[in-house]
Amino acid sequence: WVKSAFLQTDVLKLSESDMEIRVENMSVAAELIQDLSSMRAYYSELFSLNNQLLGEYTKRATNHHALLDALKDVNGMIQLAARLRHGQPKSAVILACRKAIKANNIHALFYIVKTGREESS
Image 1: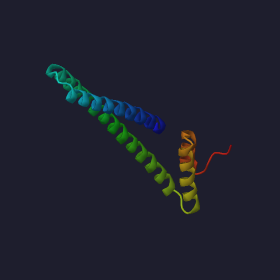
Image 2: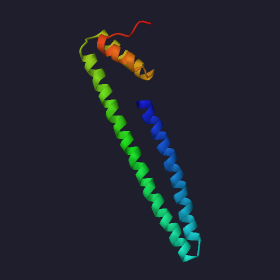
Image 3: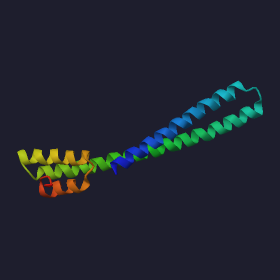
Image 4: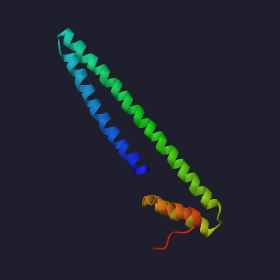
């Protein structure tokens, strides 16, 4: 889920930067042109692009907050699993969970939380 959230964020950033370039071009074109009716059309399109840009930013911000909430939940689960142990096993659980998350291995993460040790291959 985390990986897909990061991919979605990248796509939204690209879309946002593309729209920013279009907004910049439209504002320059609107200022340079002397025809008032064409300038109105450019500013109308600029307004529309700006609203789209705000919508994309809102999507990206929502996606980011959802990702943070999910990561907080995962971290809380790991802390709970670690608090059930003491000393070296506690540290081992935390390290193993971090390793499983880094490898994007959800099955191993659940196994570590449940048993307190990594799966034997």
